[in-house]
Structures are given as structure tokens and as C-alpha cells.
Length: 458
Image (tube, rainbow, N blue to C red):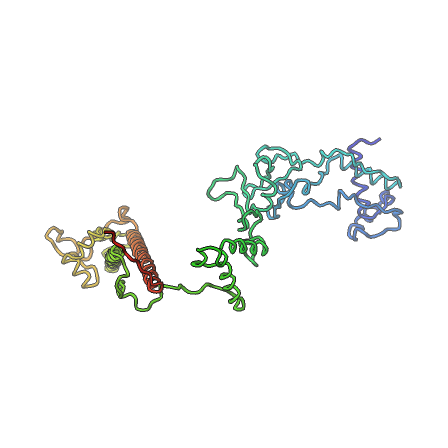
């Protein structure tokens, strides 16, 4: 009797014969090899008269294909195959161990002899368990629900990471395991749930069509019904006479339904033309003393910020003129391209008060009048032997102290302009908001014609 190894080899040969449709009687002569080669080139379902029987492939060998979402295939296969989340039972198939090969060989031999071998349904399911290791427990894939990490591509049991199966399958958009989570770039991303209270289904925000903060149109209608119920009914309470009621709201919807959209309209108050002039109202009793002081102070501060921006733009002009002076020295042969060329008068750049003081000096005024940076005005301390074209400029080559001075100074001044402009815009927005509120209050007071009677007690 042949041993397990020989039985495995025999099973492999006979299975190959069955797949190719060639009978075993053709293996004993020299033409058998040629017949096998010819049969391989033909479709696997071709019939041969010399077979005398038909052997179907083992369904466990050919028909069952492991899905691409198997944890084992994710570890060994190509990374381009998309991963899916599901139970291990839906993803796993038995490995082709020696026991499975021997079983296949027995089936092929039984089919050849005409006998029937019953399937062993009572076989232990241990063959279907992938011993892993997986998860933080480094255990097997034992048919418990598992989820794949999108960072390390390892698989994790939901029980080991305290993740519910329903939550993981419905609301997780990108899962990152505890080992890969860093709180910065790698973290588990959840989908937004439906805006209807109590619904845990994901909102329709992750597709290209019919995007909505609700999971369905039914829940959208239910949310609107709840919102309408929060409004009082007509004449139900005293407050209903002064606010929007359910009947009023439904009337607004019905009156604009034929137009394809509905809206409440423009602001009922705050639309008076010519109400403001130079930031102040043209009518009396519009602003309180505090509001008037706020507007005046804010306007003065915005004016000061505007003057700062003007100074920053002058700084940029001075930097450009210093660079032009360096380029002129290079063209005259006084400097090389490696020469620094930093003008020491740029020390006042980026220092607003020092720059403002320098601009008021005779040299500063002459510079901005001429529109260029010339040789500094002699003060008696300069070296008369130095060249006027390079005086007050750094003549070092590859100077580390002023390395990249043009780009650095320009970048610093641009940032100051941006910050100053943002501060001025914030102040202007606060002023506009106060004016809008004051105008609406004034117009509403005129329409309602409210008055207060003061009764003095004697």
C-alpha cells in the first residue's frame, strides 16, 4: 500500500487527468505525453471517447474562490485589491493541506472505479481556521467579526477593540487600529449620522447624487414635522399673536410652492436709503452715546491701521531700491554675484516707529522724492577712500549674517500688511453690524409707534 506521500502524488496526477479529459489508459505509452499536451491546449470541457467516464472537479478545489477581502489574502496578496469588512466565515476557505489533497485523490480514485465516496460533513471545522496571527491579541481568525486597519492592513476582532459590528459596518468611513492611531494624520473617521434625533444611520453625504444630512426623504419630512410642531398654533396662546404660527408657516410654503422654492423674504427692517452719511446716521435718536463713541473710536483706529499699511508699502519700496542698487554695483563690476549687497539703511525696515522716524529725516525725504536709494549723505564719519557706489553696503561674499535678506525682509513686511489689513476688516465688520442693528431698531420703533408714559409719584 502506498504511503501518504505517494498517495498525494498519485492524487495530483489523476486530478490532472480528470481536468484535462484524458483517460488513464493513455499514460502507459509514449504517446501519452503528447496526448496530455494536446489536451491542455483544448477547452477543459472537451470529451474524449477513450475516457469511458466523466470526472467532475472537486468543488472545494475549483468552484470555491476566496474573496479578495480575506484576511489571509490581504496579508499575502496584492495591496491593490480592495478590502472589505465582514465576518471571517464569509471570507475564509479551507487551505489545501495534505489532508485535503489526500481527500481529493480518494475522490478521483473512487470516481475512476465507479464507487461513490460520501462527503465527510462531520469533519472538524479546525481546517477552516486561519491561525493568524491577527489583532492586538495576536490570535486566529476564528469566525468572529473582524475589521481591517486602513493603515497597517492588519485585521482586528471587534470584541478586542470594543467595536460593535453594526457600528463598524454602518458608520466607520476609515478605520485605524489602536496601534496606528496617532491623533494627527491616522485616526478612525466616522460618518455623520442622520440629523433626525434617534436615527443612527449614516447621512447621505458620501455620494455624488441626492446629498442630504438625512438618511432618507422620510426622515427629512419627519424632521420638518417636528420643527413645525414647535411653533404655536394660531390664537392658541398670547405669544402666537406676535410670532410665526404653524398656520402662517404652512401658508408661506403653499404660496411659494409653484415657484420651485420658498423663502421668508428680505429683512423687514433696516433698508432705508440715505440713512447713513460718513458712517453716522442722518436722523436723530438713532444711536446711543455708547454706540456713537464706539463708531468714532473704531473709525479712528481703522485710519491708523491704514496709515500703517502705507508705511509698510514704503518699506517694500525701500527694499526694492536696495536690491536695485546692488544690481547696479554688480553691473559696474564693483560686486560679484556672491557679494551680499545688504544696505545698512534697511535696519529700520519692519520696525514701524524707527522707519517712520527715518522717513522724516532729510535722507529719507530725499530718497522717496528721487524714487531710488543713492549713496548715503556724508556725515563726516565715512571712509572717503571707499567707493560711493558701494558705500553703506555689505561687501562680504556669501555673507551669513545677511543671507537671503531680500526674500526675508519682503516676506516679513507682507505678513505685517496682511495682519494689519485683517484687523482693519474686523473693525469695519463690527461697525457695519452695529449700524444694521441700530437702523432696524429705529425703523421698527417708527412702524410700531411704541411709547412709554412716565407717571411720577408725588
